[in-house]
Each structure stands twice: as structure tokens, then as C-alpha cells.
Length: 199
Image 1: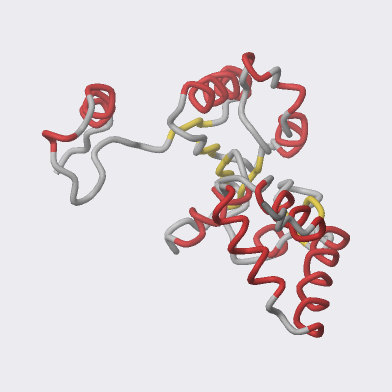
Image 2: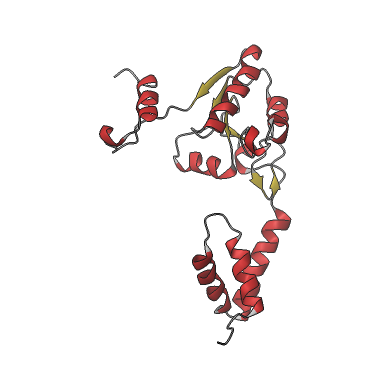
């Protein structure tokens, strides 16, 4: 039986397969998509990847991704500089921004404390957060993920910040809008009960 493997194509598939959430079949589809691009489109695609890799770096203040010295949030005069929302990843900051409700600033940790994965406090952007805390900071919102690692990170930071006299809050979480109570697990229901608000 003939071997239909084409080495450059297999290499391309392997590169796509390394991406999070991409399995072999999806990687194949992406590779064939790239092969069907015109030479100009393929060069533009390649340049976009190279430019992103070379030009994007961490904001000097909040550690979010930017192509400038400061990200658009940190450089904006309209943002409330007294409130910092601590998130695990740049994607989390984008999700918060998409609500259109949050008007403060961010701090991106680039991960969460996870002893099982050898990620400790020194591996995160915690020193950079502490360097930002001055008299003008009135509140730090912990918006880490509702996971064991996210909760551990929020608790660790809370213990560091409370002695400084800074108000530390945690995002409420529980039953999603439109969700049915019967389908919620016990932990979610317990958290929803703890975070209840007065009507």
C-alpha cells in the first residue's frame, strides 16, 4: 500500500496540533486550509504570526499584552486607577472588557498557583502587582478562575494585601443566568447561596 504522507504537510499538521484544543482532525483541516491559500495570503498569514511574536510584549504596568509601552487600559485617562482587577490570563481581561461594565484597571498574573504543576508565587506576576499598590489603590478585585488553583491564588494574594489596608473582593459566582437549579452541582449551589444579594 502506498504511503501518502507528505513530510511538509505532516509537519504543518503537527504544528497546528500543538495548539490548545486542536486535535489531529482539526489540525489537518487547518493545514489543508493553509495549503489552499494563495502565495500572497500565505505570506501575509506567516507575517502576521511573526509580527505578533516580535511586536507583542507585556505592558509595563499591568503585564497585559500590548504592542506599545502601556496597554490601552493603562494609558487611558478615563479608567479608575484606584481599582485593580486581578486576572489569570490576557483572555480573562478581554472577557471582563467585553462586558462593558468594568471601568478600572487590570493586572494579569499569567497563571495561577499550582503546586502540582510546579507553579509557585514566584512564577506569577505578583511582584509587579505589589509594586503598583500605593495610597491611591482603594480596591483589588480577585477575578481568578473558580478552580482550586484560582481560589488558592486569590487567598494567597488576599493574605498579602489585607495588611496593607486595601479592600480585597472576589467575583461572585454561582448559578448562571438562564440556568436551572436542578442541573447545578452542590459546590455551585453553595457558592451561589454564599454570594446572595439583597433585593
